[in-house]
Length: 559
Image (cartoon, rainbow, N blue to C red; front, side):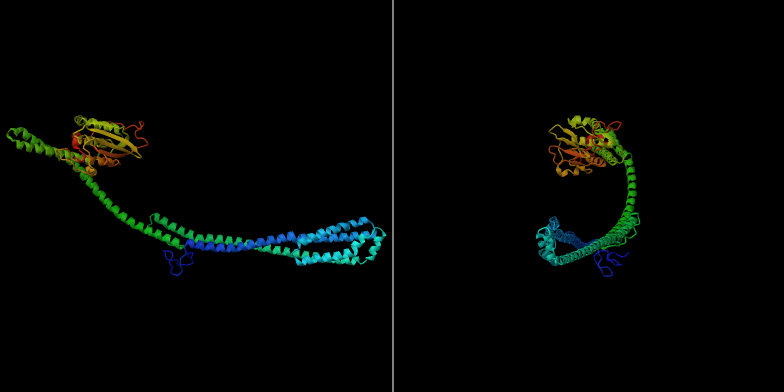
């Protein structure tokens, strides 16, 4: 399709550069600007001409109505006044009766008023003024020679004798009548000429407005056709090409047609299509690699499951056997062993036990999100109470005071949340300050779409420089002799919280103890609403393994 700029070959897709024909490509804005400007110029010229025609029509119409027609009417009235004068004078002269002079008297008054009005109407027209002056002059001549002498004569035969003496009065009035007819003919001609001018001006006005209507119609047709060819058709083609690409035909190229800006748009869409094709190729390669990695991950998980089975059964059996036989050796031959031998045996038994605890902790860590993954509504109050019952021995031995706010109901895995409470509370008990009674408080508050929990104690605390280190596996800030444990507890807490979609961190501003803050997603407008019943079933039991066997061994990362 030929471009709106008239260049059948179009222009460069960049837009402003000339195409092969050497002419620059016009944008839609430029076409609209030029078209609107041209149309405004034409319409302004036609509008000015139409305005002049309207003004001219009004002027001529006003002159015809206000001057020409009234002037002709007044000329007829002037003629009637003079005729009435001549009739009254002639009747008085023939009859000698005074009442016949009334038309003359009235005619004189009518003549003056008609002459005054006619003079005002034709005051700016020399020819009409000359006609009026000629009529009045001849009328004055006739009145001086005939009308006034007859009217002044006494009634009776004397009036007839005066009429006979002025017998030439008829010829004088004929001269007046001729002047009146000439005046009326001139006024009638002027009126006819003005009517002709009015008709011509009206035809011109009608022609101008017809031309304006034709121009508007032509502009509407040109705008419609221009928009259809320059905008609608290119956009429809662009939309059709884009829909084909959207339907999966990514190899279909986008054709550039229309004005320069639409060609630029088509070029941008084509560039986007090419980028999409490149991204799809990259995504396909990445998906293939991801499938391979997923297969490798499944294989690795299967191996991990096998390792967990071996670690929980086969790997612990030799450790139990080593510990058992060392203890048997000590009991049977204890009398023949010296103190150093007993110490070595104790070292071996302790190492086997610690290895067994470490294996159990690692198994518990690996089970988070894999074995225990039953999400349900969990009453954290009940879970915490069960956890405190399990930790009652170390709590009583340390003399710790554990308090908590009303805790909400959340959605999660009951076993994992029980492990979370157990690790946090046992850490707070274990890392107590030697000079004061342990005080532990669990708080909860709603913060938008999450619940924000905090476990606060008055123990030895955690330095700000270790706030991130404590959540890593096997990270210890104290010796095993000072605080026993494997260094997995807080790492397991982080894994449990993140598995439930929350975050956990150490409050660095806490002084005189430690505060562990973590969040869990809220399940509704008010998770502590009594109407929300917890899931049926027993409260969460503490996790089996090292956390249950030795609460103080699942220490924070400081252990």
